[in-house]
Length: 102
Image (cartoon, rainbow, N blue to C red; front, side, top):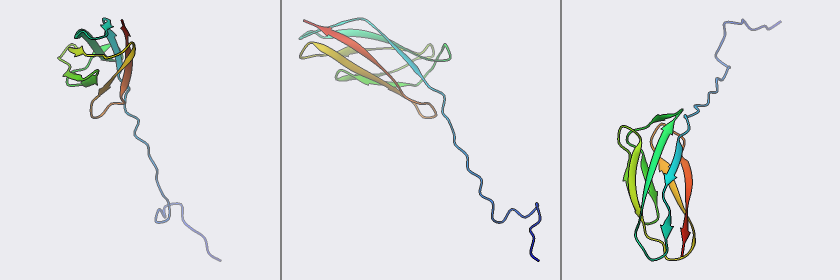
């Protein structure tokens, strides 16, 4: 009769999943068609500003300071929305949109 000891881990597999904390992105400002439009963004994790986050969108990009803030200039060719995306290693990305008016 064959039996296995509970201490034998040779055939056991251990699976793990790393869940990165998520960022929150909030854009302040509005954009106009045909005009460079300054937009200020704030990136947070659980309410605290996150330094070193790259924010891209609308033909520009910026990197957040210690308070989680940075500014970029959107150049939109038509009305609608512009998507902004915030990324940093070790975090899930965040997305926000800015309305573009005539």
